[in-house]
Each structure stands twice: as structure tokens, then as C-alpha cells.
Image (cartoon, rainbow, N blue to C red; front, side, top):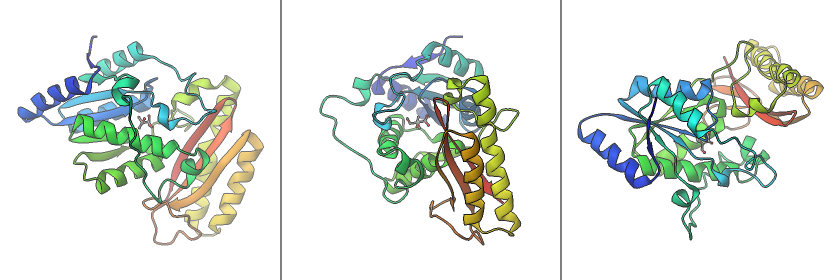
Length: 282
Ligand code: PAF
């Protein structure tokens, strides 16, 4: 199926304005392409809440560090567009780098406080790059609602904060993580793993769930649970960037969970991939 594709901000805006003029609500699903069922869940959530859905594909260079996978990140535009069309999406926005960052581009978006921990600390500059490109996409599309996965909980929290702080009218909606039959959170980076590495990767959610259960059960201090989780991770994964229990809204590091909505966050390395996940402590 062929889907309408915009390459320029102006073309996308013209269509959004026309849709809105007839009373239609517009949903935005920002992605970096290489789509999987997790992204399609975002498209479906958008279709359930809005009348017209635009999926964006832009592999944003400013959110990749020097030794990360920008150069090898898969470009799968045709297959991605087909998946979105099959799911019922209405349009794609696939801008060039020059459209997003014209010569002389010099504006940064820094969300203080929420970006100096977790992936913000482990991948310096990453969260600033995400904040920059998402601010641009939200301003470009003027959608009614934009949809982001809860797997990247810190990213979702940062985006909610910047939208609030900068008076961006688009509502930010989180969509639950999609997992495989063994609980592994779907990620474009899972595609880098061989079968043996997938088996290791599947242990991540099991370890997080156990830690969340132990904290919720109340018998264990948070730092003991985190130490135990880290020890289990170190036995399987080639590296652990962090495993931490934090307030779900402020991302403040917690040593006691009482009365707080908290989540356990982890980033680990397996084979060539760096994987993240998070789990609610009930
Ligand atoms: O989550 C992603 O795929 C990216 O970080 C996003 C939100 C599309 C910004 O480039």
C-alpha cells in the first residue's frame, strides 16, 4: 500500500492545517525508523485517539555519541512506510538532515535535572539531542497528541517536561512497552543480537521484575535489591551501565519506596547492543 510521504516541514504543515480545518485531530508518532511491533503499537494508540496519524522517520545524528551506532543504524524507509500503511497510518514525515538542521543551526534544548542521570549520564549529550529533535518535531507538526514508548521512560519524562515548560500545546502520551513472549522489550537494537545473545537479553526483564517484587514486598532495602540485581546482570551481560530505583515522575534516586510511584531502570550491554528497560514497583 502506498502512503502519503512529506519531505518538508511546509508540506506536512499544509496537510495538518487542512485536516485541522475540517475538525480532525492529528496524532504524531516520532521514530528513527527500523520499525517493529513496538512502533506499530504507537501508531495504533495514535489511531485510537486521533483521526489522522503522521509517523516520522529521522535518524537524528545529535542524539548519537561519537562511538555509537549512527553509521550502522538501519535505513529501512520503504519497509517502515509499508508497515505503517498496513497498520492504518495516514502519512509519513521523512525529512532530510538539511531540512532538520539547516546551515547555521545553533539552538540547543536542555532539560535540566531530568537529563543528568540514567541514559543522560551514560550517554553524554544523548538526552539533549533527543530534546532538541523532539522539540523541533512537535513545533513542526502542531499535532494534537504525540506518542512515545514507555520503554524509554526517561525520554518520555523529559519530553513531557519540555512540552510543559515550553508551552507546546501537543499532548504527550506514553504507550506501554511491547515485549516478546519471554518479556524482552522490543527494540530496534535487538536486531543486532544472535540467538544466544537474545537468550541473555531476555533475562533483563526477569531480573527487573524480581527486584521490583522484592522492593514492593517490603522485606528488602532498595540498595540491597539493586546490588542483587546488578550481581545477576554482571553474571550474564557484558556490561551494566546502571540499575537504579527512581521516582517515576522526578527521576529522583530513591532509597525508600514508601508512598512514591517508582520504577527500576536498567541499561546493559549484550553482544553489540546496549539495551534499556524499566519496571514499575507496585
Ligand atoms: O525514541 C526514538 O526513537 C527517538 O529517540 C525519537 C523520540 C524519535 C527522537 O529521535
